Amino acid sequence: MATTPAPGRTPAEGPVVLVVEDEQAIALAVARRLAAEGMRAHAVGDGQAGVDAAARLQPDLVILDVMLPGIDGLEVCRRIQAERPVPVLMLTARDDETDMLVGLGVGADDYMTKPFSMRELVARSKALLRRATRAREAAAQASTASPDLAPIEAGDVLIDRAQRRVSRAGQDAHLTPTEFDLLVTLASSPKTVLTRERLLAEVWDWVDASGTRTVDSHVKALRRKLGADLIRTVHGVGYAFEPPASDE
Image (cartoon, rainbow, N blue to C red; front, top):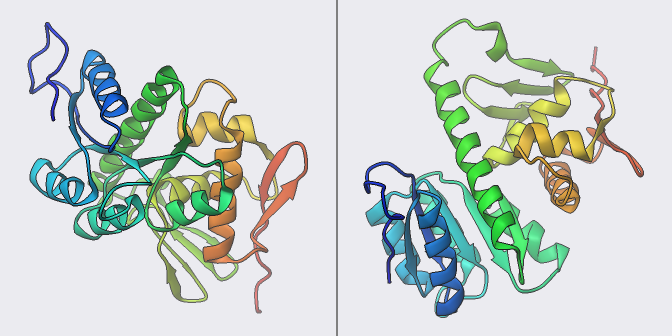
């Protein structure tokens, strides 16, 4: 199944969004709403079809259900990201933080729990697309000597903003685009407590505070990949980047 952009728009105008969802009513509702927002939305109903469609369409965003017939959403995400990095918004029927962390670990950038608000899904989709655009623009500027892209060095942590790479003690850490942006935001203001609301605005580009658990889950994912000592929790407020002590 596939949908076309909303009336009055030419197909070439909007970003391509792939919806992988086996509940047809949800898939069509999401695709139609995205098309009404000017996106070129395509919907498929199982995991293998999602992998095949991603290879064929080269989407700008994938909205992916975790529970799918055949190949589940986590494996679909792994395969899609192995072929080509793309923002992924995962949909889950369970409000289980373990599932969310696993999803983030295989390359998802964000998640939503069913039932969800269509308005919020559209807002998060647009935010992911905006961030992907900014990342491409930053990559295009990587050859310049812009001070905005100067590496951040903190103890044994090296954050290469131009190449969007992170290492600790010489070991590369494979971060999702969202994890990288979150780390840069925190590390750019070391030892400064940033509220969850501010992080949502600066990293996720959200205008409300409805997704504070998303921040918490991404911080946990960062700690798993880089160590628990880098990011300090200030309960009830937010998080602060704590530069590791130098070995010298």
